[in-house]
Image (cartoon, rainbow, N blue to C red; front, top):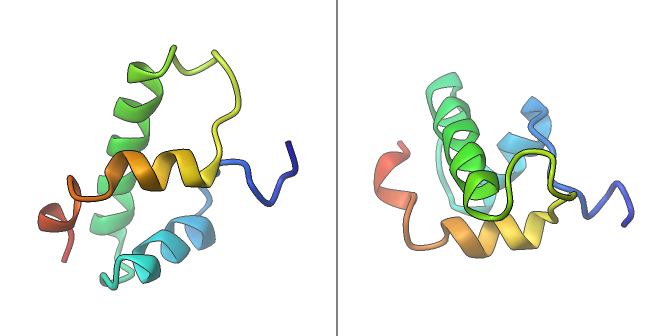
Length: 70
């Protein structure tokens, strides 16, 4: 898998997700995304199971997270 497709928790990557959902780029929102990333990985085999793609994560959070973000 290429780095471009791999899920990352770097601030600029989290900001990209926030832009995608038309939400504010804030530390609070980035923290919310980090929490959802942990839930996502835990529900998909654990933190070390495999590398997950950004698209996998987007599909997982779509419709679930919007109300938690500013």
